[in-house]
Image 1: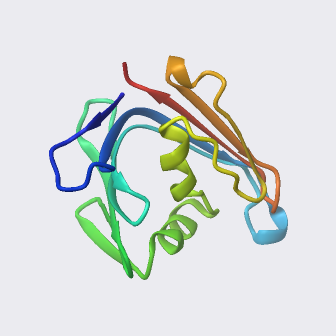
Image 2 (image 1 turned 45 degrees about the vertical axis):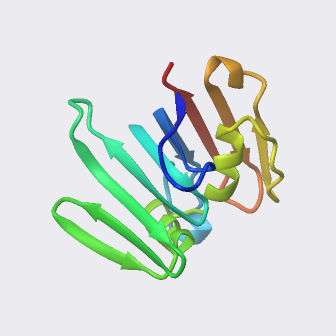
Length: 148
């Protein structure tokens, strides 16, 4: 699902659905087994300023990420952690980079090239997006299923 909300910025959108990320094992980097994450989400804003919320199966907020130039905040389990930018937060939490700027483009149905990533938008009209990182290691797979 995507909708534009009433702000002064017409590019400000909101997407919601389910997101999953699987990161393969990388023993050379101290990650002996694959990691996976899946949750309902709501993403709002733009690549330079926005918010990403993850929800539990019962609908309560499990974690919230907010970012703006020079600052990214992670709120989870009654704790707030601060990072210098969104990339640092994502690497710390997920153990790998995820191209959030490109994710906004992919959600809008636009192909945006990112080194090492291959995106499949062929099912975007059905609300499905998948992207796979093949380089650098570890390999990762991102899947999004948007709400109707």
